[in-house]
Amino acid sequence: MFGQYGVVSFNGNKIITTSGGMLLTEEKTALDKAFFCSSQARENVIWFQHNGISYSYRMSNVVAGVGRGQMKHLKERRYEEAFKDLLVMMNPVCRG
Image (tube, rainbow, N blue to C red; front, side, top):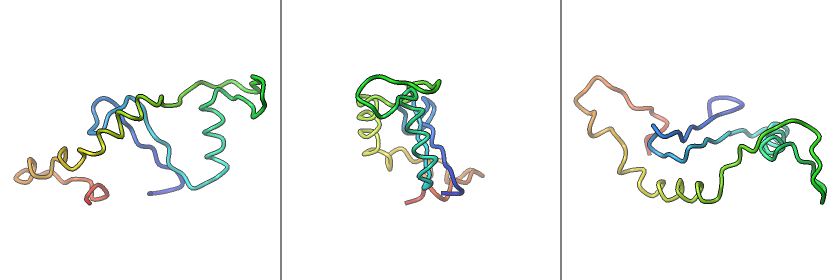
C-alpha cells in the first residue's frame, strides 16, 4: 500500500469488474468506521437502531462471487504482451 488508505475500483472498465470497490487500510478505527457506514450506520444491537445517516455500500455475495471467479483469470488479462512494442509502462505493483 502507498499510504494509510488505498482504494481499488472494480468498475466496469477495469480488468476485474464487479461494479464495486475495496477500501484498504491497517487502521482499526478507520476500518470500524467504514464497516459502520457500509451497514447504514446500524448499531450493534439486536433491534434495528441507526444513530447516523449512511448508505448500504456493501457488495452482495453474488457480486463478490463474480469477482472471485474473475481473479482466477487475472494473468490471462494482463496487457504487457500486447503492449510490449509500445511506449507504455505497466504499473509495477501489478507484476507478479
